[in-house]
Image (cartoon, rainbow, N blue to C red; front, side):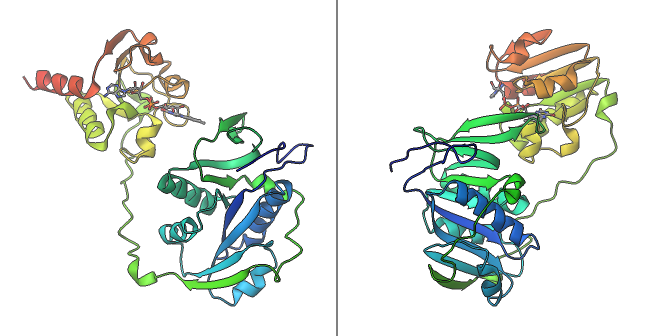
Length: 333
Ligand SMILES: Cc1cc2nc3c(=O)[nH]c(=O)nc-3n(C[C@H](O)[C@H](O)[C@H](O)COP(=O)(O)OP(=O)(O)OC[C@H]3O[C@@H](n4cnc5c(N)ncnc54)[C@H](O)[C@@H]3O)c2cc1C
């Protein structure tokens, strides 16, 4: 597919020839018009992207007529009747179009589906998209990072490009399209409610509130390098045997291997223990700032060059799971 031209935002007219997009919107939400406006602004500024399909969740098909005026031209406008949000089923509908770009509105609905679809299709996902440049070999997407303090530029490797827009787009100039109603065919589908077990996909991690990691005297920190929930729980058992508290890095909490309350770092607890043992954590600044008051840091990491190693008083280059088992065995003896 040939692409040329500049950026979506900024002065230059961006051009991205031949890109086909599917757009997903949530007609169940009162913010529908703002979602459509954001998408309209993006498409206005990325004028050469053609919309293959608008896929819109609606409570009943009559809403299609009401909401349709906010959509631009597309080959198909799919109205999905649903009583509640069923991300997997919506993803399957969008996947069927095989578009190179899947575009999602600002907000949780868009971010959730965007991440799911990219993971499912082995594509690239960008949430809170501020800007994108399709002119290079790989699109360059910009998004706010570090609590809006920095703008990160991310090169997208894999198609489809799944893009969830930042809410800034809702206030940018847009046109909904001048061929509304004339272009595209309307397709009506009802999502198979009966086949979806709302409870099956849910697993709640009980909140723990009986501890305060900022007051921990000793801390075992489980990092992403532990690889799975079982290993993280094994590290928690080690902490117990050592009469230490137990904390985790962000990917561990994000993978639901541990409750979010266990998070150490800028987004979690700032700890000041006498010692901290970090197992399979790289030593990112965001984590280490939560340990900057620790008197001694010990680290186990497969990679001797990992940042945590040079920041530790004792660094062991090795397999963290093995060290956990060996320490537990020693303590049991
Ligand atoms: C705004 C913002 C806020 C953030 N806040 C926090 C925060 O509060 N806390 C936080 O932790 N992160 C936070 N992060 C994320 C942070 O930047 C890092 O991505 C995160 O700390 C990395 O966690 P990790 O080291 O466990 O995982 P990874 O970066 O995946 O590192 C895993 C490490 O384990 C090692 N490893 C792999 N396998 C093994 C093995 N078998 N045995 C031993 N070692 C192994 C690897 O060599 C690697 O060094 C934040 C990020 C942002 C953008």
